[in-house]
Amino acid sequence: MKNILEAKFVVEMGKTTANMYRLGWDERNGGNISCLLDEKEVAEYLDLNRVIRTIPTGFDATALIGKIFIVTGTGKYFKNVEEDPENNLGIIRIAKDGTTAELLWGFSDGGRFTSELPAHLMSHISRLSVDPKNRVILHCHPTNLLAMTFVHELDTNSFTHTLWQMCTECMVVFPDGVEVLPWMLCGTNEIGEATAEKMKSARSVVWSQHGLYGAGKDLDEAFGLVETVEKAAQLYMLIAHLPRVNTITDDQLQIIADAFHVTPRPGILK
Ligand code: 13P
Ligand code: ZN
Image (cartoon, rainbow, N blue to C red; front, side, top):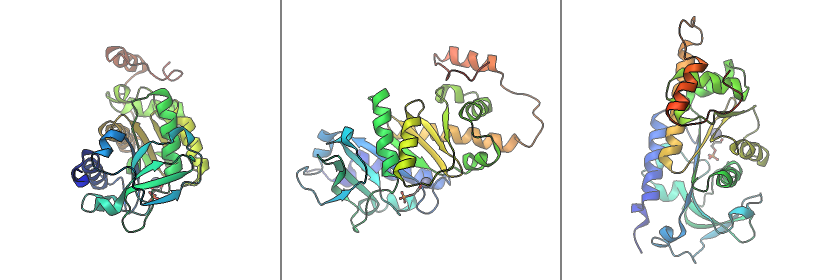
C-alpha cells in the first residue's frame, strides 16, 4: 500500500484548506469540503474492505451508494488540516443502505464528517445529474460576499447581475450565475435540500448572512469559482456607497459571453 499522507487527494485538501484559511474565508471551524474520489485510486492507499466504523448520515443518499468521498470533519479548523490530515479529514463510503457512511480513514480522534454533509451530498447528486465530471462541493464564509448579503437585495437575478458587472471575468467564470437562498438554519436536511435544488441550475449558491457553496470538477475549479465570486463582491463593497460613473453595460456583458462562447443565465441581460 502507498502512503495515504502522500496521496494527491489528501495533499490537495491540505493546501486548499490552508489557502482558504489565509484568505479569511474560514475562521475557526468555518467551512467544509467534500470531494468525490476514484475507487481505484483510493485502493492504492487503503484496504477498501476495512471499515473503521459506521456513522449514520440522517438522510437518504441512495444515489451515491458505494461512492467514496474525502470530507472535512465537523468542528475542525481549516488552519490545522495540512499539519494533521488524519484527524481533520475523513474518507467515507456511502453504505448499501444509503443512509450510513462507512469510515475508511481519518477522523482519528473519534470525530465525524461536517455537519453540512446533507448540503454536500445532496449537492453532489444535483451536480452529477447535470455534469458527470463534477467531483467537488466547497463551502466557506467569504467576508465580502457575506457583507453583500446585508446590503443587496437577495434576488438571484439582480444579485448575479451586480456581480457580473464588477469584473469582466465574472461572465466567463460563472455565466450560470449565483443562486441565492434566504437565511436558513445551517446543518439541516432542509438547507441541504434547498441548496441541492439550486445546484441544478448554478454551480454557486449563496447562503444569505452565512456564506457560499461552490461546485467544480476539481478543487482548483471550485476554489477558483468561489475566489471570483468573492472578488466581485469585494469590488461591490468598495464601490456600493460611491456614485457609479462607469459600468459594464448589458451589451458589453453579452459581448464577453459571445467572445468566450458561454451562455449567460437567461432572464438577466436586457
Ligand atoms: P462544520 O464544522 O460542521 O463543518 O461546520 C462549519 C460550517 O461552516 C457550518 O456551516
Ligand atoms: Zn458555514
